[in-house]
Image (cartoon, rainbow, N blue to C red; front, side, top):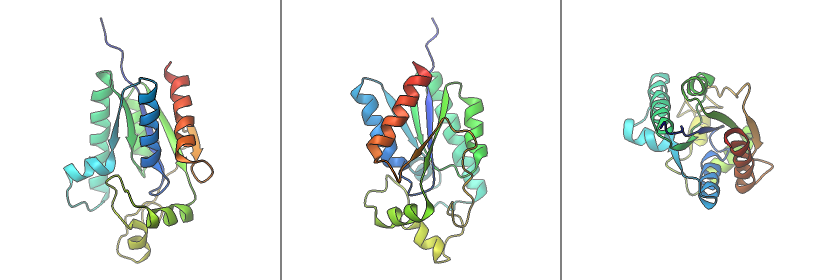
Length: 184
């Protein structure tokens, strides 16, 4: 008997848009209803793959290819996955969409100026580097999505959640509703 595959939701958006907080709130909501899932975070994975990250295009290619590979393996083995990753290029998310059969993309939309403010004030970073926008605006980093590197918004996400208008629990609830609709 073939085990059903797990599903994947890629939570994408600019740094500071709330991806990690929303992903954790989504994980909590899933656990509350008895659904097991695993967060795969680009920031956490990057610490293992590239302990001194440079955020070059080549490095990003490696990190996102690894995320897709791990997620594909997990979903093929029945594990539901929440990817918490900016993935500044559409290509990264498009590859996941092609490789992972039960896939949805959730775009956490938030104006850049709010992301900058949030990022400068946040305490818990979920392994994300600190002060990325400050470094980018100060000329110390040219690779920050939205400032020095492009962030290519999804063209056809399964849903768009405006994190400047909703709190993290409300955002997570919208994603949970989309997961339920897509995979039930």
